[in-house]
Length: 476
Ligand SMILES: [Zn+2]
Image (cartoon, rainbow, N blue to C red; front, side, top):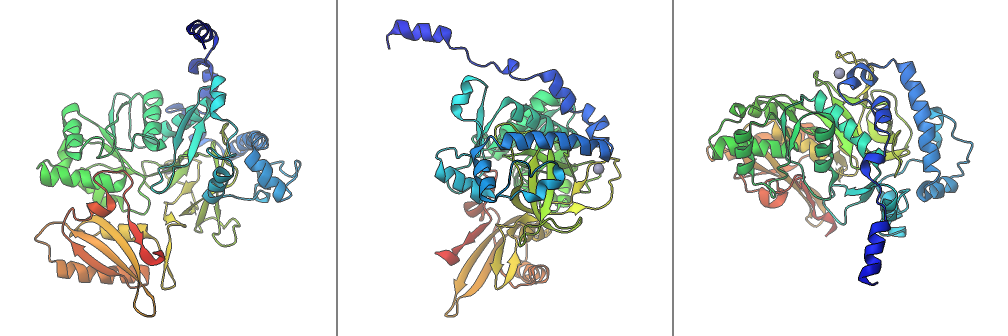
């Protein structure tokens, strides 16, 4: 192409501008951001909420019917066009898992057929791609339309406000900045819908931990966001290496996806409440706890959450544990219709003292596909982490190695644990932890106590946001 023709083309091709891509006023009414959220959806009578969800659900079903992934799967199970008329028909739809997404990508590389948009649609709407925070293999991509992205930012802002973020705050975000959605999602939520200022320090390999603490102190950061292991690591670096009491740094609130970890030791280190949330890169923010820290309120105007029996795949009664299965009510590019995330939780019976009408997930007990079988007993590495974190003679860091040993091939798990400092009686710690883990897990595991920071080579906690916790050598 000649330079002349290229200039002509440049002057003709109109990109879709973001500010024109949505009816923003309508969006504010449909998905109220904070503070309006707390006087609307947060306290909405159940009957009104039901009606709202019905309408949104049918819109999502219509959108899903345009997407090859659902067309294929629903055809295979004989689900007809007229079979889904309301939320009560939800259980007729076959659930899918991450394995079906991987299969969709393998069949139709590089993006799969589970999305109703492709990068070429960037000609008509601004698109952005982010991924899962996966630690193995290629990350799973997700293209977000303006509608997806803005509503996700609003859902994120609701969580952050529930967790103590206020207009004018400085909020330090120690989540990965890159392909993984976590960091950028929080930046958009903070910047656009909370009035707080994001300070995107990223993980330890983007901004070293000591520098993270110096920035926090020099700039007067109010709220700190990160994975529990990193929040603990930061506090210990401040206290023991920089000789700064983390409680003197003026952090008013902590926000972390706690899972099964005990929030108390982290709260004590920082002298601030630590709030829990649950979300995924495909969905955005699903649930967050309130000031009462007693379960996470589900954003029910944006999601239908079911809890499924891991074996039968059928919904379990309220209060029983199972796999979280979500149906989105707002997504355009890739609606999620019965996506079984395989994270284990339960819906709490009863209501919360905060007065919200939104039901609560208790906490995330672990990933059912992280679960490993040790001599016939189901073990979650997350549960081991929670028990280690309770032990004040350890740093809270841990790493599990599973081996098949001896002539009979006995499965043996060794839990490596760091002593908090050289004065710790490692023999006593070893014995106490072995007993404690045996009681809690109902299967014997071996404990090996190592010195502080020795596990970093396995977990990568000082460098990456998602620490590695398990090496299963049985398959080697
Ligand atoms: Zn509440």
